Amino acid sequence: MDNWFKSKWFIRILSLVFAVTLYAFVSVSETPNSDATFSSSTSSTETVDQIPVDIRIDRERYVVSGVPEGVQVSLQGTPASVTPLLLQRNFDVYVDLEGLDEGTHNVELQHNISSDVEVFIEPKTITVEIEERASHEFTVTADFINEDMMAAGYEVVSYSIEPETVTIMSSRTVINSIGAVKVYVNMDGVDSSINNRELPVNVYDLQGNELNVSLDTESIQVSVEVNNPSKSVPISVETTGELGEDLELGSISANSEEVEIYSQSDVLEGIAEVTTEPLDLSGIEESGTVEVPLDLPENVQAPETEEVEVTVEVEGTNVIEGVSLTEEGLADGLEASYTDPELEVEVTGDASVINDLTASDISAVLDLSDLEPGEHEVPVQIEAPDGVTATGSVEEITVEIIDPAQTEEE
Image (tube, rainbow, N blue to C red; front, side, top):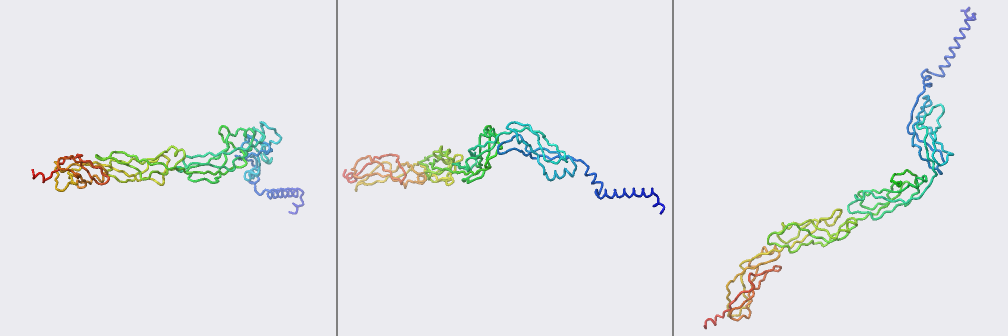
């Protein structure tokens, strides 16, 4: 063994082994495993969509169109350099328009990503239009949608907008193309006034296309006054069918002369009266009062009067037989003679009264006052209950006044 250490070649070989071992140890300390060394040297490609594009220009002076909202960016490099970019998104894609005049320009999209990563942007080149910024004040109008679906009878009386105008900032071309600035007020089911409803502003060009422009305010407040107009109109009673035989309609009327109806103003203007639903006369046999619903036009309401009382007066005609003649005013000592002591009487009046009359309710009176003996044509006076018209079968009767004393002398 001592001889080996005295050998020049042994010492040289041992030194070489020691040097190699030391190099290997240092290399392993700096790169702990072979997988990490392999990984850091591997190239990968990742793609990110919808990366926003920043516009570098004096925005107070110019308006730019043609810049896409988002572009596709592909990143190629080692995972150590690509992964942080994917996670943090701490890079920008932009188009530099500084120094360019108004007009159309083909420009290339740029980025601020480190040169360690290869970057591919799609699209790479875009066409932009640079125009001088302009602003103009426009009046805002309100459009009422579903107005026909408001609560029954309600209508828009007036409305107010605050602020009444908005200032729009865009290119001169866009400003000149604006045709309308509106807010939309949904009136579906509205039955009371609207106070300070906040609504978005919509801007349209002359062809009705919606424009994406900058406004000094994105929303405004709208107040709408609504009303439920009304008016009083007469009530007319409608009938159907016919009364029974020997019955006549004396009169028919609603106990309420007028009714308060509610609807839109233009609807109310065309209504002079309202009617009831048809009352069927075929089921009525006598005078009385019935409840009849109102037959209101479409979109018209009468919340306080859904139905009305209707008074029906029915007149009937009846012939009463066997009405006895009654004598009045015949002087003492005289007698009266006539051929038929009874007659028929035709009575007309309220059916409920007429139907219950008998001969005892009617009087047929012969006024014999101041009549001398002999034959006389005496009127028949018919007396009947109040409200009943009575007519006898004859208007007068031939009456013979007899003095019994004279008859005996003869």
